[in-house]
Length: 469
Image: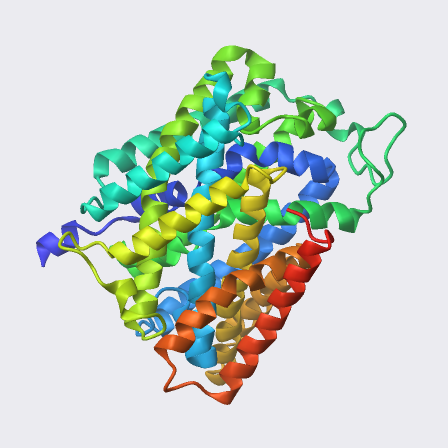
């Protein structure tokens, strides 16, 4: 008992774990994405919306984890509790998509950073970048098939390489910040003379930036999982709240302070990773090198965990009889070989598609954010259902706030992303039907046919050139 207790983590250590796991590649490139869409004032409004939405989501995740500990098949088990097997599959398949698409964003950012040292990889979206990215994906897949899980020293190295550039960046931004530059075009709803930006309303600016802000929070659901490592339940609650506040402050300052250091046009024109370009402009080449080296090591370490996450998702879906059994069949090293190979093949195809995509990183982050929002929406819906049934007024309110945020995010992120997402479900439905062919119900068939119709519409619009990516 004493040994088990000694392995538990206190509130400080748990908070550090949550923060480290939540910070990914998104924050290294968010500055240029945000500047291309919104003025400082509009960006602040968008941040407030996102912060409130994710605070409500974190509450829902923690509340449901305590109220329904029997639902242990990932966050998509809440969709199963609300809507049955098809609901769990739709949420789980979407979470699987979001997980491996995140790996694509990792690869794109690695190549962009590497391009600052080796011109052949400049931009991160040419043939050498794609080929090297594919090699990295398959190498990590091979390591996982041989039984590699994770190592404490790797996690520690990744954490240091991730946090040091962020800390240096914040110090430099605070020192170089000019209030006059930050406020000179605070709203910029109507483009000024000579501005490279077209006139945009406040809503349009929020709409354009919201999907990128959501992307940096993808992974926050890990907070509810890490809560089981706490010494006391009160430690888990404290760590979750403290971590969320810390992430809000870190993300907010890092993405907003550059508006007071460089003009919006300069920020929007920066290649990825934007953070290295901002430091290079402010302190010189050493700043750019610091961010690039830290980012490359951080992303390589992150690729390991984000290779494990999608295959763990498909394993759980297979064990719940929602995917064919082969998806959960492990080799002698305990790795689900079939799932790993399929995931790596899809990542490879996706990487090669970037040769014809104008902005690979933005496209990957947009698809990941849209898919994650759909998965989070199921959590919120079940929180509403559970709280209403069990007369939990706070849970009901938080579920409604979280649900409205996710629905709003899906609506204003754009109908194109939603339609593209429907195409991704078609092969999944074929697998679902095969596994549950003896248990299909009329409602499930109708729901799948509706999504299939959206997928056909998406293909038609792509062929007509109305949807581009």
